[in-house]
Length: 391
Image 1 (cartoon, rainbow, N blue to C red):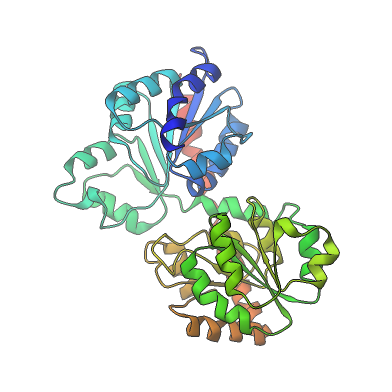
Image 2: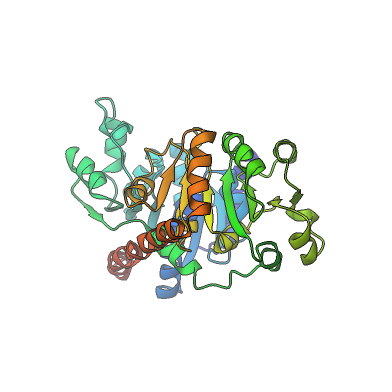
């Protein structure tokens, strides 16, 4: 899939983009970056409807899920970063501006954009000291980073790091994901099976979980009070792993695909395992407590903001140093970190039994999202000026 998908990129571009079309190119590493870039895509599409939007992905997971997204005129895999591929891709795409989301910097593409005098902009950028740009041997990558016309970063620390290597053309915009998730609460998030499943119950939603998360969750689920129900949405829909997960659970468990009628969801299971994609965001609206996966292992913490926007207290693992939003929400007491099954049991018992504690933590989480929106407006002010002056 990874290799085969890239073979069609140039053909797909040629079929969708004419030489006379005005275009804007967004590059996203994966699905998370697409969600991060979506508010900007939407704003650009509304402000500049005459431009066609090209969205590229490096990851198959992002491409497969979003290849038919209506926001884009064409969705493609980004060919591997070679001078030849970069020249061919950019010539066929001929964007008025290239917008990179958060990170993933491909030097040959950046150098080719500079060569063709096409402005490049980074949005929701996040930089850390351990990245190659800030190492003694990182001169080549620093040179690529300096080709950006402007870099919008999430926080002061990122801007300070950029200044330490002589890059001054940056602004602190915040994270566009806050804008993305803040709109979700305005949508219709109702799901019939969740309405019946959660009636008169306290619901814990475990989102984007991995086996490391399952290992600490299963003991708590098996011993949880009768009035608590669980939804588990694994990060990967792997039948073998879903089967192993179900085997660990002693409570009545059903897969989402097995739910034939709403009544079955309310009368039979204590646990529903979601074996399809596209439902998790809405499911979070039913949560009283959310456990977000990825930080018990080394795969990376998944998006905590999707749940936080609904005013839900968050529980995560302890490997989240690279996720500043988690550290900030923890410092505010809207998020709690655990390192083993016993710690999970302790915080879950507290959240389940103490409604005031649970509601206060949830209120903090919701306010955290609401008070950090605005990155889209800051970024669009620059992009509007840039696009209005670009042929």
